[in-house]
Image (cartoon, rainbow, N blue to C red; front, side, top):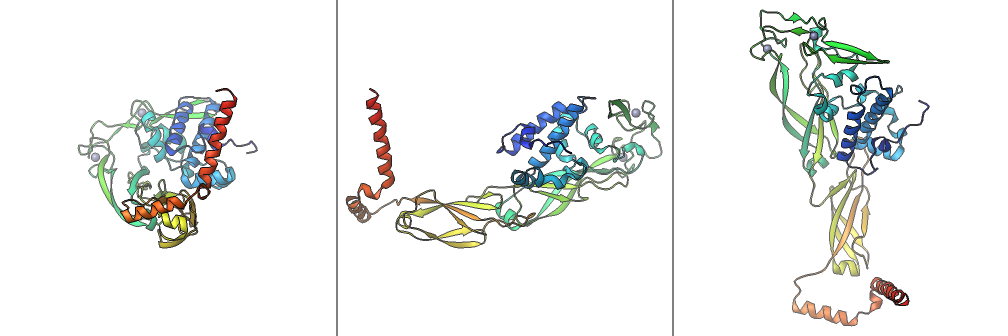
Length: 394
Ligand SMILES: [Zn+2]
Ligand SMILES: [Zn+2]
C-alpha cells in the first residue's frame, strides 16, 4: 500500500480528455496482452492486468472519472476498500468485461474469465445445485427530456432460464448423467504456476463434470431455454449518457434455485437541438438581435426550469457566455445542481426593406473607425507585418 499509485490515464496510455471509446480500446488491448491465462506465472503481467482493470473501472464510469479528475486517487479510494481492488464488488461485475473480452475468451456465462475473478466464491454447475444467473447489461437510448425529468420505460429482454422439462439438468427425464472420468466430476482442471492458479474448464465434458448420454429434447441437453422478460424501468431524474442503473435480481434467472443475476442499464441520451449537456451544466447557443447586442437589452433564455430573463449589456460581442446559476441539471447521485450557460451569437438582420436599408446607409455614413476598435487593432497589426516584410527586403 505504501507504493505510489500510478496515474490511471498513464496506466491505460490515453490522454486526459480521451473519449469513452478510446479508453475502452486501450483497456481491451492491455487486458488482452496481460491476461493471466495468456501469461501463466508472470506476476508482472498479472499486476499490469489488475492495474489496467482498476484504471478502466474508474475511467469508464463518468461519475468516478469526474471524482478522479478532481481529487486523484483519493477521490475514488473508498470504492476499492481497504484491501485494495475488490473486483467482485466493484466492477460492473463481469458483464462489462465479458462484453469487452467476450470475443477473446469465448461467450460464456461462467467461462475462464469469470472463474478467475470469482475465485472460489462461485460454484460451478457441476455441484449439481444452485448457480447464480449472469449479470446483464442493457443499453437504453432516451430523449433529453426523459433524462432531465426522469421517466418510466417498458423494456423487453431476452434471457436464458432453466428448461422446465428437465429442471435445468439437461438430462432426459428418467435418465441420469454420467460422471466425467477426465476431471472426476469437478468440471475443471487446475494447473498452477508460481502462486497463481489457473482453473480451466475440463476439455472432455466442457466444464460440466458429467456427460449426458440422453439429452432432454426440449433444451437439447443445455438445461437452459431462451425466454423474454418484460419489465418497467424507472429512470431517475438527471441521468446522463453513461449513467448506470443497477437492478438487483433483474438479470438472468438463476439455475436450479440459484439467485438471479443483476441487470445494469446504461443510459444514452439523444442530443437536443437547444440544450447541450456537460455533466450537470447546460449550454445553449442563442441568437441575439443586432440592436440588443449593440444597445443592450433583455432577452428570454430557455432553461429546463422554464424561461429566464437575461440582461445583455450594450456592446455585447458574439461568443460571449453568460451564466445563470442553479438552472442546470440535478445530478442523481451527488445531488449537485448545475448552471445554465448561454453563448450569444449576434444575428445580422436579413430581408431588409428599402426604408431599413436607407437607415442603415445613414448609420454607415456616421460611423468611423473609432466605432470599431477591434478592426482598428487588426489593421494596425497587419500593417506592421508588411512594414517588417519591406524592411527585410521582400
Ligand atoms: Zn431440458
Ligand atoms: Zn470433465
